[in-house]
Image (cartoon, rainbow, N blue to C red; front, side, top):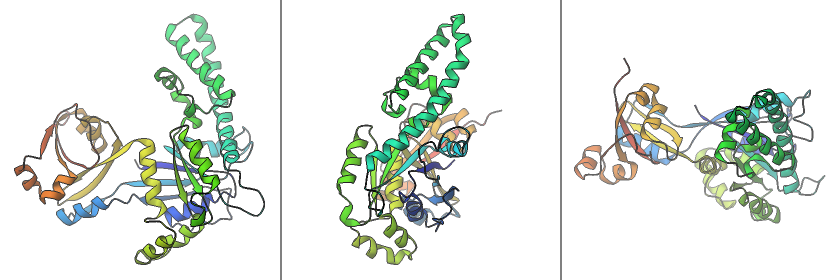
Length: 356
């Protein structure tokens, strides 16, 4: 399943402009009540190198689904309004890309952190309702005295208390048991956040508002990507051959899609590995630290259940020696077992016993 990213932000923060810059979708700015969706291929220069080496009949790159969620204002997530639709979009996201206005709009002064706080308050308000309902449902079972239920109840109550104090769940330093207790609630303020500082031009890449946002993000270990939304949206519509010159004028080396994806991968702790041959070059994505059987399960569940071993070649070794045979001759091909943790750039063959 592709990486699911939800773009959130206040109205007029340039969110749809950023969406267009990343996706080249040319989405309308005038239908702000509707979500825009697009799937983008995750750029990876290693894929082209593997294609040149194997000449496969099929290429399956990794992709990312991006949803431009309508702007959030005070009360937007309240029950009875359009809140339920917005909540669904947000809850489906693996990572929230929070677009923050760091440019003058002619009506309101720049207030980056105030805008961040308003969105957080909306997410926390919705989370409090969800968690409060769970606690209410658990009350009767707690009276019976089941130790496990009592522990879960207390964990949920502590998280709720901090939400009501204005602390987003991702900033609460939740323990393992607290995370388990609130898991089913899909708390939106617990989702990892990647901040996008949307600026007017290259002269604002290190503005006071951007610096404030970076300082705030460090407090929760989040990333900040700075984007000249309007200009990059225009560049994304140009032929690829013409983009480099215009990006250089903005002081950038690549389009925002690459910077956003790299930051999202870092935020979620993701790595890519490959299966490669003359039939297909395929990119697979999993969590960093995933054991070999779990990574094999990304390819097919039978491979995880019947896992025997994994044959591994590092991408760098394949490029250095030029072929799988040369890598093996140099002693760089490896056989790994169930405890092996997959690494970014691994090229693998799975040996497994099909379930009977």
